[in-house]
Length: 71
Image (cartoon, rainbow, N blue to C red; front, side):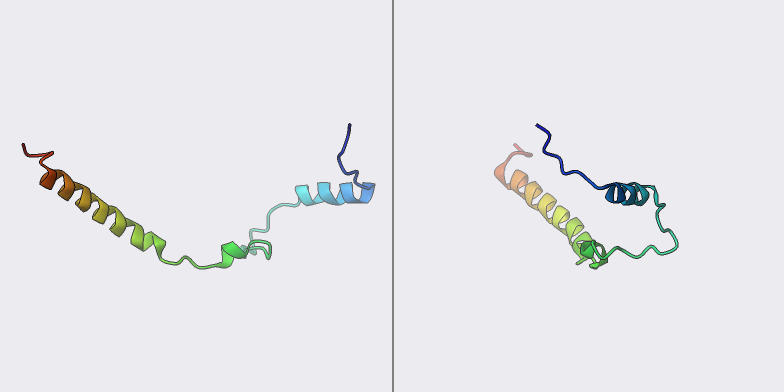
């Protein structure tokens, strides 16, 4: 059973023309449909290396104090 929605010839033509339209490289602004592209980053890229270093130190301390490294 075919449950697809049928497009009128005008809708089909608009769809095909929209697919063939090249990307606008002169105006690289994000589209209105992409609000997440306009939002600035919240500094997570600065926090992540600090978290990795702290976790590494915690794991090293756990190994040293539990006697896992030095018997």
